Each structure stands twice: as structure tokens, then as C-alpha cells.
Length: 136
Image (cartoon, rainbow, N blue to C red; front, top):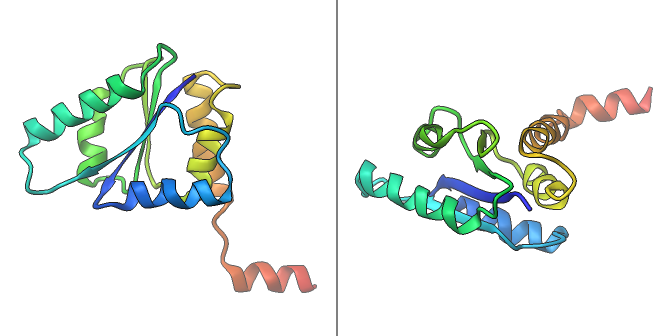
């Protein structure tokens, strides 16, 4: 099973997991959220991330989901990128978490990262435009 670390500003990651649980996750094993506290030193934050990766890792890789490209969670996670072992996908939304958790036993790490990134993009709509097209 691929481990999943949700790494975000504030408590956003835990709230995403809580909400995804309501919608339907097939397993919460090897899934944790880590909140970045801007008051912590970069060394402390890197140690927390390393410890979290170890906690969720089961030998099949770890997918790190972050909230904002260019933000501290993403920037810190990039130091852990390792082909086939750790991958990072940014721009977190709820469909990404659900897809990651529910598809991680059917994919390798690279495939899961791509699937999750695609799920995030495919679930963004401009509602008014979407409805106007459907009414035509």
C-alpha cells in the first residue's frame, strides 16, 4: 500500500481527511495529516516530515499531497522527492484525497501521483458556464 501524507498550512489537511471520511474512504491506514506551524524552525519541520514519511511508508512509496505550490509545505516536501519512493502533488482538493486513498492499492507511486493530479484538475468547474453548456 502506498502511504499518503497530507501536508498543509494550518489544520487544512486534517479537515480534508475528516471531510473525505464522510464521503467515503476505503481505508485510513497509512494516511496522516501534518500541519505546518510557521513558528517551527525549518530543521524541526523537516524532521517532522521525515518522521511522518516513515510512519506512513510501507515499502511501496509515499505520496505527499500539499495545498499550495510555492508554499512552505510544498517547498519543504520537495527535499524528500525520490523517484519511486516519494512523490509530491500540489494544489490539494477533496477529490484528490479520495482518489489517492481509494486507488493506492491499484497503482504504483508514479501512476497514483498522475491519477491524483488528473482527478484534481478534472473536478474544477466554472459552475455557471458548465450549466449553460448543459442547457443548450
